[in-house]
Structure formats: C-alpha cells, structure tokens
Length: 246
Image (cartoon, rainbow, N blue to C red; front, top):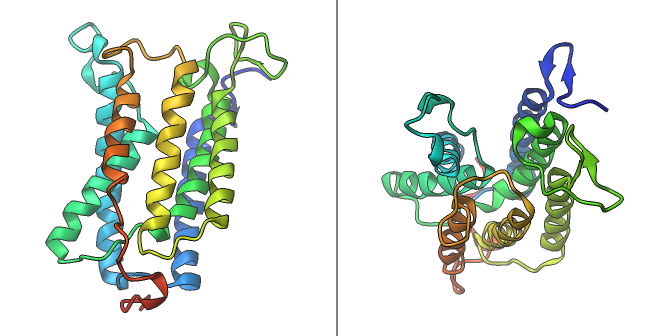
C-alpha cells in the first residue's frame, strides 16, 4: 500500500471524516430513539449546534498550540497545524456547558453522545491511517512485526491502536453499571483522555513541549481534573429522568 491513499482523487482522510460525521449523527438519533434523552428535541438541537462550534474551535486551537513554533514564520497561521480530537472533545464539552447555562438546563446531557462519538472517531482514524505521514498521527519508528511503513520505514500505527482503544472503551462501558445521569459520558472521557496521555508518548510528530509534555497531554490532564469531578453521586438515575425524547 502506498500512502497517502485517495479514492478517485479524493483524499481518504476527507472521505472517512465525512463518513464518520454521517454515521455518528445517525447513531445519535438512534440512541435518542432507543434510550430516550434528558432534554427535548429543540434543546438537543441547540446543544448539538453548540457542540459543533466548540469542537471546531477547540480542535483548531489545540492544533495551533501543538505547532506554535511555526507561528510567526513563513507559514500563514491559517495553515499551521490541523485539528485534534482531544481539542474537539474538550471544546465541544465546554461549549455545551455554556449553552446549557443560557438554556437553563441543569441535568447532564452527554450520555447520548458516547456511542456516536466512539463510532465516528474510530471511522475517522481509518482516514488518518490511510493518509500516512501527512496526517501527523503516526508513532515512533519500530522493529515490531506490526509496524507500518508509511514511506520512511516501519512505525507504530498509532491510528490503529486508537481504533482498538476506542473499541475496548466501548466494551468496558457496555459492561459497567452507570446508573447516574452523565456517568457514561464521564467515564468515556476519563478512559479516552488517559489513553491519549499514554499513546502520545510514542509519537514524535509534536515539536512543542511544556515541562516534558505536549499540549495535547496537558489538555488531557486538565480535562481529567474536570471529569473526575463531573456527575456526582446522588443525581437522578437515567430511568427516572423526566425530560425524555419528544
């Protein structure tokens, strides 16, 4: 296989990113239909809109921090970095919390996103893998038998590791008892952020470090501080939520 992969001239990254969005949204509607929701349809639409805006901003901001050494050089700031999943998740979360304040929503609203997020992120990672070195998500060079040659020798296929990690997180969450509203989303974020702190130690694609850690790793740490205090015991169980899907 030669990288980057394209389909009829269309970059694989774009194909799988769009596919991830479509499948993610389809699964979101399915989750609401099968399991209900903690907010009505109108408020959910506003929260989805807020999440998209926050995710776009967060993904871009963290990517800029990851490549902040390029700012002020010959490369226009618009083209510095790209997008980061961690930035998107945290930016989307912050944006939703702000929107909830304006909408007067006090209940947790994240559980319905978990399965759609896992699926869309895993699909997106296929696109990252097929893009190869250009995507900047590969790992160190390795002699391990499953190393992938993206064009400069065998490397850790951290994109594929990410897909396996997301699958493992989904299986764990399916087995966990999460009766408290918001607890499923809380545990998803905790597991994923811990995973990213670990897996980013075998990447060499980020030139910027602060006290030995990349901006993404620091963002994960800050995110963990937030999510370890999120969804306190005593909130209503999902089976007792009043505002179900309408």
